[in-house]
Length: 353
Image (cartoon, rainbow, N blue to C red; front, side, top):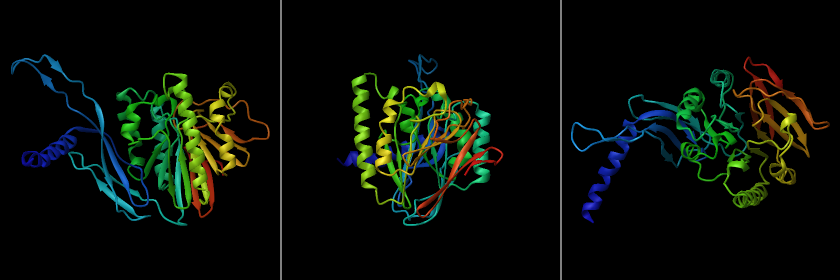
């Protein structure tokens, strides 16, 4: 027993040293920011290990992999900006603001579908950093082209770095993430759907990627039914929130004609959004900007983050308020029980307010 206790500090020290020694290829960034807690994550690439039966021979070489290193902090103060620095050769750091309590005003940014056209993705990030001061960012999915290919993630983090080091990050799982373990590891996501509060507003992040949930139809259906039951409980428990926002990847309504089929499962959520007075649902998947209002709920498609644009060729009569095929992001200013949403192009033009 004494031997085990004496070794424990050494093991912890070695683990920390290994994490810092490995090359940082993603982050640092802040996830799960709440009023009194936050988690800082960075992604490292492990070294190769060579193995042989003599000092001069190498028979096997391990493949370097990516993994996340996480540090969680509790006991923080609501609505306060904190600064952090990750030890190591690069001395990387940033800042974030914890969620406020009560009626404090705040701003957040929403955008998505950054998986390709990396220069355009970079331009979007630069425009957000230049023109906004978001407290947090919601990404509506399809962060990369194939979430299971580890080589694609370092570029995403490098492009996003100026934004990720100044605001907390809440990602949505898109179909191009392919339900990858990397997505769950890098963003410390333990549940496929979750919610959080910011001021008097309540936010729900859903997993609409029915196709990649599981291999069997039975498992997919069970997952979907469980998520619907969870969603209803969550919304029912937060009817005292001044505003209720939802984010997921696949839109139940779209002005892209070729995408207007196959919406049944996502459409199952619509009655719950209406029943529990959801303010707005933010979506991706279609690479353009769309704004629809149905049953008093605003559906905003913001998929102009870099992927090739789609034409908006089939607006919905009596439902569609605005569509435009253009690169953009959405910024939302919350003031008490009022939210003002603006869709903004790269050059600062307001598509819609």
